[in-house]
Length: 570
Image (cartoon, rainbow, N blue to C red):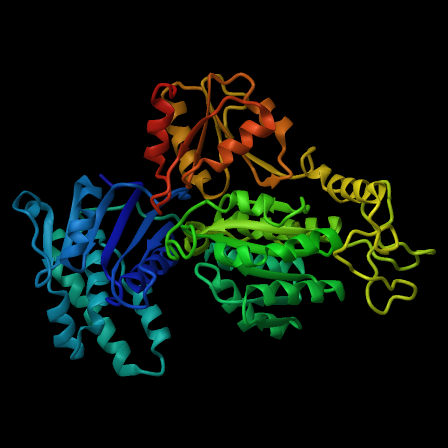
């Protein structure tokens, strides 16, 4: 019987081509008409150490990467030792015959593949080992290799001999698995819609920034945010913008603030350690009311932590970092597609409310490849900042009805001002009286109140006002939660999820109303201390169950299903 979706996991040593094998299979599946989603994990070192690439493909949209492997591909013995317990009871195993020993009880569904041997015979080295592995996967899936051949020919167009060797290795691997052909037959895809694209979270953020009108980007390379700097460095200058690689994260944000002061839509991207360095400048941007967008692709911490693993442990830092209660907006996209729209929202909120906006993703979402419908550019709505043009008796920090003051742009007549971080009056003159400080703090915070009072989008799934279980989450846990809710509702449970995309300021009333009738309220998140659960308790007064984990891996839908079905925690 044909399967609706298949989970493939490739594992081995960093440097063996595990990640490139996964990328090739994912691109080929997308070109072949399948929906896909991936997850990858690898060591922080350039070469060496275990790495893994998981691909789930199916004939319908994929919301999570899957838990149990239908096909496990082992490049070495460590791959088997680390991943055998993730194999589905009916899962198939492909393994390098010179590297891996499989226990006898698994041999009936295992197939040795001469990865090293065939690579050496065909190309004179083991460099084509990954193509042999890819070919063997295609053999098991009865997958058309034409899209892969096209990818190889395009990649090595200037090296015909290399292209021929890789294609030969591909077919050799396919022949190795001939006796398992169709063992994991997947439903044939429907005709590919023209608007489908394969894109990562970081790429979606980059494209969203361009759609939002970004014209200045400054950054410093840091895993897992570096793709944004690389993508914009290659493309933004040709669109009339500027990209600068700075000496560190402090200089990056300082440069962004200078560009924004001059009128540019400006942005930087970093991870947790870089966000720590930016803390003082976040406070300055909040006090001087200078718009900017900061992407934080979260990774495992603390300190250098787990640079290539996923975590959601920067929430507190994003909400509160910088001394003295500095205002900012914090947004958490829930999917790769939402990375695009959230980036546009980030620029809109930043420009309208003249605040720093922190966009929280994580390693799993940032590096995930996913097939989505291409966003409709006609649906993009852009907000611009209020400027001093035409304003008489200009006061940079004027108290206004909506608490947003006109911002002078260099060159505007009468719009000159000092963008100071010291406390100031309406003109920007230093002022230290209680009345000035209280007034300015009220002004700076109240201008973002619309985001907690209905303006910001909230994502929900399942039952509205569920009777059994309400789930509150943020960011990348949405996909697994969505799948788990569908499974629970099919069994008769009343379950629903609410995902505030804007976490600061927190939409307490809307969350409280959603959960009002629930017997249990659970909060799944990827950190140690349950940061979102603590935020929900403090903002809403709700009694919630914290289900936090910090193993560097995303939730699977099955994990959420188990939580939903268990009795309430004591």
